Image (cartoon, rainbow, N blue to C red; front, side, top):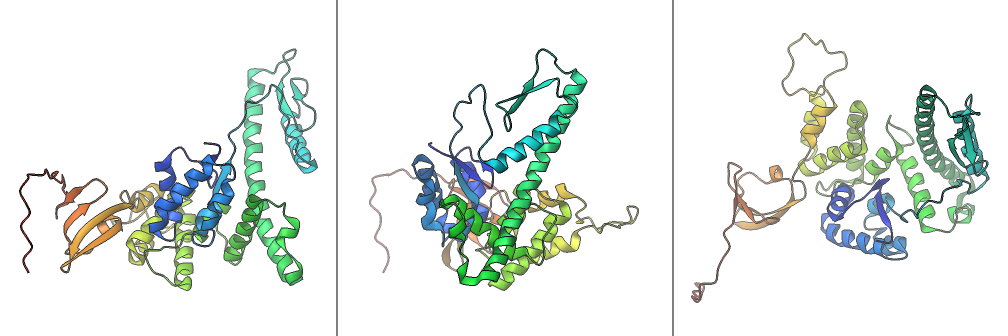
Length: 361
């Protein structure tokens, strides 16, 4: 591969992982195979963004969340972080905070914005090294918060500029002419607009993924989808779900519908519950219980079944098949599902040489 594939900052290891990460973001499940192939082909090419731009209108959730990054080259012994004056200022501030009180024990390679190494002529004590590591974690968290600040304010300010200047303001006038920058900017604006009246105590990525989750199996109107999205985000905020856990919640809603989500909301334990009071056995007390309930382990499997004297195909969770479905076969591994849930491999047909009997008229 010429490029590493990232989905919302997570590097993708193989095709199976790619499918798992993009499935909740796809509007039309029938596009999964095609867009997976195009993403893999783009990663092997020279201009990956151009290769998937054809999906911009059909699958905006994918194009907003996928990114291609060149694999890192072998790092030189001395590496500088300087790219522009603002980068230099931020790197210098971070390095200054890290070195404070330890200036005699550290050396900055490459000047301002470079890297810190131990001064071997006057190394720190082990205790001092531990304190520096703690400071590093604090700086890393500050960098993550700065990224959040930048994306929300990019959306907020550009939206304000568009309202103030109207058609005289164009993002392309001010954004560097690269597809990655342009798509990132448009996504920031769209995410801000979708949540400008109600933001949750969750990351920008949580909000972005929620915006582009279309619930294709539910056939919702835009207003219904918007309402469901906010209900799910409220649950995600209540339990402080990670992005991957939130995807499971959204996938659960897409596969099983709105009624099970209402049941989850009704069973969430109130924060002021009396621990000595008899509890509903279905009550959801913590994050792990919620995640276990919404984890759909077979959400992307394909089933062939007979219902009302017709053959049907269903791609999703087995539990969402209609009651009364018979002759259920999972076509992913060609196993027949009995009414009690037992799976049996279908026997392989061997040609006997006997001619088939003509069908009755």
